[in-house]
Image (cartoon, rainbow, N blue to C red):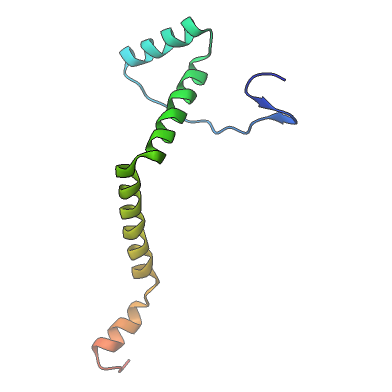
Length: 94
């Protein structure tokens, strides 16, 4: 089996554009070259490591929960019928 592939075919992937300053891009290229890997593979590993660290980070989880609460409030506001609010303010008269 080839690296990066599962039995039954390649893993599905999503193309993304990543903008790096030239110095960082060159460092990334050098790391990939020294390790005999593709730049994409090294970048994927770095991103996966960052995501895993964040997933375990208490501060990040708190921020995630705060964002979730804000989004839930926004959803509730959008679900509320603005016409019903106007009727309530006018004493139930449409």
